[in-house]
Picture 1: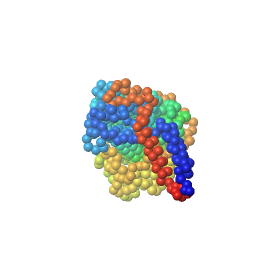
Picture 2: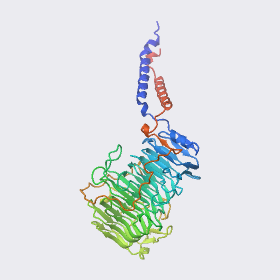
Picture 3: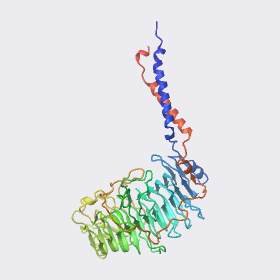
Length: 550
């Protein structure tokens, strides 16, 4: 008598059913964490507002050329693996985000939002006094990327800012943008030391013809305890930027091209550092090209044309605590490098090539291996010393005059790309003085008022906004220092800097829902069905035991 196979298969089929049920239970348990499918959404000025309101993590809004209304994102959150992106055309006619003429609001307001990318947009301030280009407000705005954008017509007053943060901000990437004429190019942090800007990367930008600062990063009060705000030592990098000022008046007070302020004296943030390297600083008729306090490394930059001091490191709102200034080229300065205050955690000024009235000045404990001469003798060292953009070339001549004994780099080996010159070329034996390690014809970018073009691949960085390199530097010592103060003539937050209260056509407010909109059942149902089908198919493909096939 033959045996029917069905009873023998019952346990297997029961197991299949149990596995499917278990899988469904798991899917239901994980449902809130499953993302909606990421979408590329083409939009134009008539459909942008609706698409922005419906955007979920991973979505990219692809803006057609045209003129778009200002917008606010409030309580909108992408994710570390799924940013929300607003992207204009990379070439051809632009997508223009236009300021409100009132103004009711800043042109792009990010309030309590995160993992937001703005790409290839033209942000037009329209000469509206009080309308910032991109503004961050609220409690925290973190992991924002502004890339390949152009900012125009933000210079009605020195108080108008192209990119501003008035919320705790960390994980920002500001890359490849052009800021062409602004009251202040970037104002990151708050004038009273609140709202710290932390763990940022500012690279390959062009900022020209500002009334006040090209860039200022404000000093910091003790760091607030906010979820996700870095509490371990972090690094903010400014690299491969072009910072240019003109002679126009600064009615609210003269400003350096770039100023970076100090970090909290104790607790979270006290071991943070700035690294400023591979930048081109050009022209300032009344102030320094760069001023810094806190903990800072400044290397492989080119500084040209300043009546006063090219590089000034000193106590400001908070004390100078650590300062390493090395391998820079400085031309046509009253003073090349001034260390105006003692740096209790260490200093070093070495390897610089300086053509200035006074090469170095101030309180410097480790001053060595710099090369300096007069402006008239600069032609003996470099190819084409000049203060004319596009004509200047500070690449060393072939006679070896810009070289010396090998530099001792021990203090700075933890710095990012300490071993690369302005062009990104390996420094080799560390014998060259100044920003370039080579001689003869310059293989790199010509110094002018445009984005820097590197000769090699772009410097490596990690995704998500954390700059590479550095562990926070040396262990701090106990510092004293003056009571923090607010400078006279500081750039002040605009009246609307706390966030837009208007109902702009493109505004999205999800703050009441605590962030991004809930994911719909459609994508989840599709994912669940796909997983169930995959399991069943996999089991069906599994060879059955031979005993069950007869």
